[in-house]
Amino acid sequence: MGEKLLTIEDIAQAANVAKSTVSRVLNNSGYVGKETRERVEKVIAESNYTPWVTARNLSKQMSNTIGVVVSEITNPYFARAFEGISEVIDKNDMNIIFCNTDRTPDKEEQALRMLQEKRVRGIIISPVIDYDVPEKAKLFRSQLESISAPTVLLDAPVDLDLWDGVFFDNFDGAYHAVKAMISSGHRQIGIITGDRKNKVVRERHRGYIKALKDSGLKVDPSLVFVGDYTVETAYRIGKSMIQAGMLPPAIFTANNFTTIGFIKACIEEKVELEKDVSVMAFDKLDEYDIFGLKYNRLERDPRAMGRMAAGMLVTRIQYPDMPRSRKIIPSKIVMCR
DNA sequence: TTCTAGGTAGCTTTATGCTA
DNA sequence: TAGCATAAAGCTACCTAGAA
Image 1: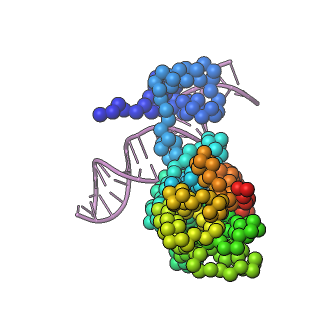
Image 2 (image 1 turned 120 degrees about the horizontal axis):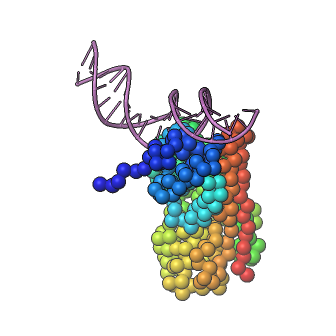
Image 3 (image 1 turned 90 degrees about the vertical axis):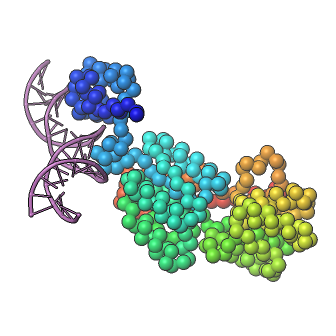
C-alpha cells in the first residue's frame, strides 16, 4: 500500500492558509504577501509536494501536453524529426506523449483516440494511410476532424490538402536524385522500390521514371526491383542481384532501410561502392558515417522538419484562427566524388 | 486605492444512494 | 433493476471582504 498523496489542501493546512493561496503561490499569480509565500514554499519544499497534473488539466480543461504520432520509430529519419520536435516543445514548457503506429492504420486510430481522451493541446502526425485510396482518406479525414486539438501533418504526401503541415515533394526529390546520377555519366540505373500501393513509394518511383525519360533513357523493367522498404527485403534483393550477376552499374535505393539492406549485401558480397556499383540513397544514413561508406544521397534535414512542425503547432495553439500553413522542406543532392 | 487572502463554482468521471 | 441525482476527487480562476 502506498502512502496517500499530498494535495493542495494538505499544504494549505500545514501553511495555515487557504488552498487558493497555495494555488497562487504555485502558479505565481495574483497577490501573495512575501511572508505567506515563503511559508507556503517552505511547506512545499519540506513535504516534496508536487501538483497533480490530472486535476490541473481537469480544472483548466486542457493539458500542457502534445501528442506525436509517427508511423515507424525504428526509422532514424523519424527519430531525428522527433529530436527537432522535442527541442521546440521543451522550450515552450510543454510535454510530449509519443505514439508509434508501426505503419498500422488500426494503431494510428487507437493513438489518435487516446490522445483525444488525454485532451492533448495539439497533435503532430506522420500518417500511415494512403491518400490515394478514397475511402481510407475519407476515414482519416473524418477522424482528424473529430479531434478538437490542432493538428500538424508531418512528412505526409505533398498534395494532401488537410490542416497545417510540413511536407516533402517525393516526386521532385527522386527526380533530382536520379538526374544527378545521369549527369555523373550513368546510363543504366536500377531502382529498389517498395510496395507501389503506397503513395510515397509511387511518387519516388514516378520521379525515377521521369528523370530517365527526360534524359532520353529507356526504362528497363529488369532494373526495377520491387521490395517493401525494409532492410531485410532490400538485403535479399541485393544479394540475389549480385549473385545472379544482374547488378546494374548504378542503383537508386528509394528509402533509408532499402539503402542499409542493399549496402549490407554489397559488403558481404565484396562489391565495392563507387567502383562496382554507384548508389544513390534517399536520405542520409547518419549512423553509418563512421564506416566512411561511399554513397551518393538526397539529403533532407529531418530535425529541421521536426522543429518546423512543432513551431507550426505551437503557433496554431496560440492563434487558432490563423490561415492554414504548409511548408515544403528543402533537400540537396550530395555526390560522394 | 492597492494589496492580501479566503471562499467557492466548475471542470469530468465515477461511485454511491435514492426512488419508482 | 433501471434511471436519475448527488458527492467526491484536486486544482484553477474568479469574486469578494478586510486591512493598510
